[in-house]
Amino acid sequence: MKRRRVRSKKDRLLAAWRGVWEPEDLSNYSRPVGEVMETAMQGLGLDRRLDQEAMVEAWAEVVGSNIANNARPIEVRRKVLIVQVLQPSIHYVLAQQMKGAILAKMQERFGKENIRDIDFRIG
Image 1 (tube, rainbow, N blue to C red):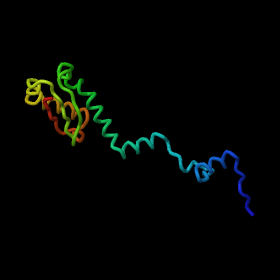
Image 2: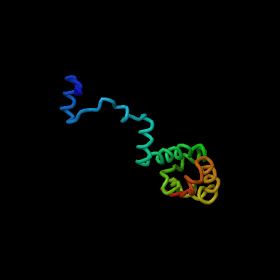
Image 3: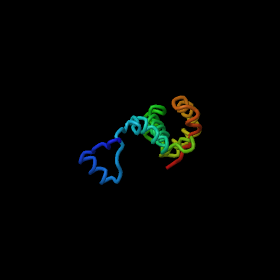
C-alpha cells in the first residue's frame, strides 16, 4: 500500500484558498521569462510596434535636425511611414525633391520588407 505524502499546513491552506493542489514538481510548467515575453509580444503584435518606434527614433539621424524639427513621423501603417509636416513649403521639398533619398536611407536601415513608401501630410 502506497502512503500519501503528508502536506504541511501551509500547503493545505494554499490548496484550500486556490481550490486545487499544486503539483510537487513544477519544472514541467516553467519556461524562461525571455521566451514567454517573446511569445507574448509576437502574439500581441508588439514586436512590430518596437520596429516602428525604432523607425521614429532614426528619423532625425536620417533626415537631419533641421528637417526633423519641422517634420516628424507619426506611425507606420501597412508598411508606409506617415510623416506629419508643419509647413507646405517643407512638404513640397520633402515630397517632391527628397522623398526618394529618404526612402532609400530608411529602406537601407530597416529593410525593404518593413517600409515600402513614405506619405507626407501637412498638419
